[in-house]
Each structure stands twice: as C-alpha cells, then as structure tokens.
Length: 308
Image (tube, rainbow, N blue to C red):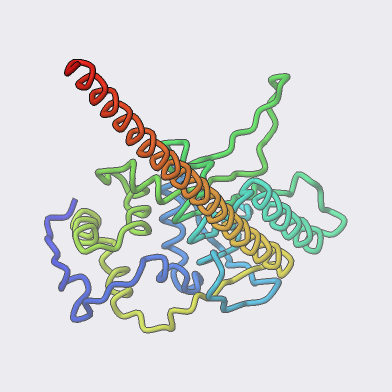
C-alpha cells in the first residue's frame, strides 16, 4: 500500500469534470493491452498475456442507443481466444446471447487454425474460449444473488471429466457496489474503477492502488466525443443485439401501458365506489331524517296522551 496521499486535484489536475471509467477502456485496447491483462488476470487468478487484438469481421459503428460500451476479441499467448464485453444495461436472455457469441468465437478460432495448419489440423489444436460479460446494470436473474462474479461450471451426470473448452463469467457491477465495502485486492480494485466515479471513491482507490493514477489522469484529459464506438466482430450479432434492445424497450413500453391501463381501471372502480358511497350516504341521510321525524311525532303523541 502506498504512503502517498493524493487529492482530487492531484488526480484530475485542472480538469474537475470526471467522466465514467468505462469511457477510457472503450478506447482501442491495442494501445494498452496490459490494462485488460491486469484486470482479467486478477479476476481469473492466473496470469494471461494478450498477443493480438482480433480485427472486427463486421462493421465498426457509432451508436448512441446501444447498450454495449465495448466488445473486444483477442488471442492469448497460450492460443486461447477471449472476448470481453461491457454493457450499460445487461441484455435479457443472457445465456442464449452468450452461446451465440461463443459459437462465433469458436468458429473464428476453428477457421483460423484450419487455414494455418491445413491437413495437419486436428480438434486437439482447439484452445479454450473465454467470454467475460461485464454489466453496469444486470438483469433480474442476477439480482437474486449476493455474488458479483458468476462463472459457469460444467459437469457430467456420470462423473466423467472432460476438458472444459469454454469459460463464461458474468460480472455484475451493480451487485459489486452493494456487496463490497472495502477493496482488498487488485481484482476488486479494477471493479471499483469500473463502478465508481465519485470523488471520495476515486481518491480512496488511488491512494490504495497508485497504479490507477495514470488512468484517472487520462480520463481527465479525455476530449473525445461522448458517442460510444462499438467494436462488433459480427454484423449478424450486432443485428441480434439491436433486436434484443428493441424487444426490451417494447416490453418495457408494454409494462408501462399495462400499468397505465390497470391504474385507469382502478380509478374507474374508485369512482364507481365513490358514487355508490355518495348514493348510500344520501339514502342514509334521508332515512335518518325520516327516523328523527317519526321519533318526534311519537314524542308529540305521548305528550298529548299524558295531557288527557
């Protein structure tokens, strides 16, 4: 732990406006592969080395409406393929979407190895595929757990063991913010960097992990357009994501419409009940008046009888 103590002005210099940390990591990772290496190594618990950022096979798009902040595909020194995606809002049907991305990554590796090794290619050449999905706001399925790293585990009913060729981890920053009070290791430091941008959190993180100081200083110098550059390696997957976004928005609109209709129906019931209560109240007042008049008449008759 460093003995230095940084202030906000030390970190951000003369620029007091602080952008989200996700904005920094969406820059071209070829410039700073060691950042992804550090983050993923600390999360995996094993050292990884990125050897190549894979080119985008589809289109490079600027899309203000997309939920995706960054999507990076790369190869590792051990021959594995890795894909890291960041989402502002986690997509519905995350398992189905993940399978599509894994299939795409697996076929990319298969096609490249077949092209390189030709007749010498065998399935033994296929290496592990890693997929990390980082979500700022996670779907409801993840809210049921107090964990913030969700790694898929594969087993067979017979008890046999086979090499797992796929690693899938969902990282939910919203549950991280709720679960972790004190940052104790580099993995938590990276997730804190991605999760918090208030002054107190920034100062606390940099004082505990000074290696983040240059990143925050770069954020302070960040002068790019706020438009989010989305690097998608498959146009088909991009279209699927856009359809998923549209579905989520449509479903939300349907929920709002249903709630509005329910509220209108409830208001009609309230109005009907109020009208009935008002009618009942009028009838009750009339009955009370008639009773009082009858009692008065009885009292008058009793007085007349007493006088005789």
